[in-house]
Image (cartoon, rainbow, N blue to C red; front, side):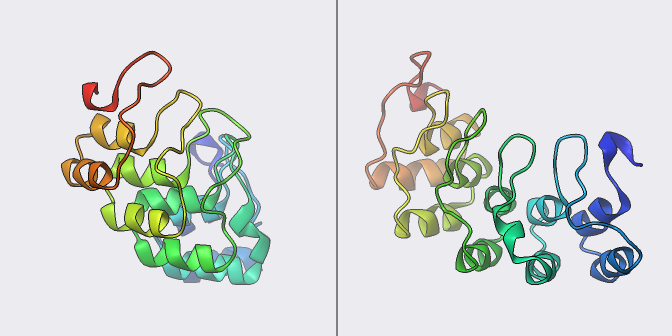
Amino acid sequence: CGAGGGQAIHFACMNDHLATAQLLIINGASLRARDDLGHLPIHYACLSGHSVTTEWLVNREPLLVHVADGEGTPPLHFACGSGNLALVEWLSSRGALLTAPCNASPCKQPIHFASAEGHLAIVMFLIARGVKLEARDLDGWHALHYACSWGHLEVVQWLLRQGAPLCRDKVWHPPLFL
């Protein structure tokens, strides 16, 4: 198949070619086909922020909202990194967990993906739904670390106004050091 073990169905979903994805499924492609990193077609659709394709996939197989890739990352995390708030809201309405259990390294939460990419509206949505500012990954990073590391000033300012902790990560780096 493709580089990285990607199949045609992965590329169709990544590029929001719904009619092509539907044709591939009719002809035997699997919604649960994994590439070498364990990504399914839904991970590609969410990573690219494609609502229509994601909705079609989930409507066809509702449990896809919970299926993690090879690193333990579910679709919602990728949607948070894409910047598509409507997609994040839709996945949440379909039962996607806003705080997923940590089953693999680095154990990044949806808020970490949104903060790292500078998607303030998604960070605000997550916090409004009860996600904790103190949520940490396995390295001790929380949302403020990610926003500082990637230089997303607007997210940093908002997180600080919400009382984000200035505590250090596991190697003693405070967020504002990054």
